[in-house]
Image (cartoon, rainbow, N blue to C red):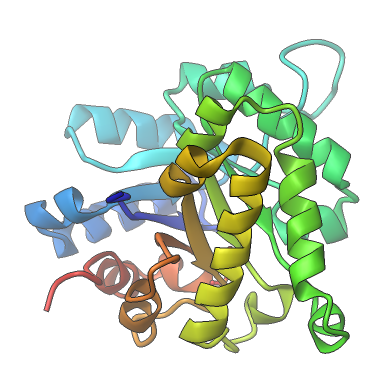
Length: 257
Ligand code: PGA
């Protein structure tokens, strides 16, 4: 089955709303129309830039989808500081990153919390990007497959197979995030294959054929083409390199010579 690649730029806690507008304008300037047919492109700014970017994207009819970096597991209520998935959907946010390793390690998000966020995003009609990935110690101990399998199973618990088919899983080895150390294309492909096999186990082969599996971790203009040439890699979740319009445009143009 032909899966449309999805390339997402996770800006993390960088860029205020004016800088975010500037980056999107520069990015669009560097891209040409056919890029938008070859892949789905997603910008994932901090919450404070979502409204400005929604206006820009809709006003100029840009074919860039909006994503959020996380969301509350609750729809509304006394949860000071949280942002509801319903509010994000009202800004036409299409994707929500759930369980990024920085959320897991710095903010104590467990597999159970991540699972509830996946459910909350789906409930609001958005597409979760479920992040999974092993630490360096886990890889050295030979348990990378087991860790990723557990995270995928837990993250997707209770999600209907038809919904699993629609979502995105990002395999992001923690040792590769922000380190400049990328998984080899073969390792990335093998681990994205582990993700797909686990999806087949929990939701069936149709869902596994349809689910898009991204690789993330020091994706750069210089390694995107080789990563994307592997059968199980359906896109990239890009951190640092997505903050540079030219670099991110090169990554988005991976399919062009
Ligand atoms: P990086 O981040 O591209 O800077 O390694 C990836 C991520 O955290 O999603």
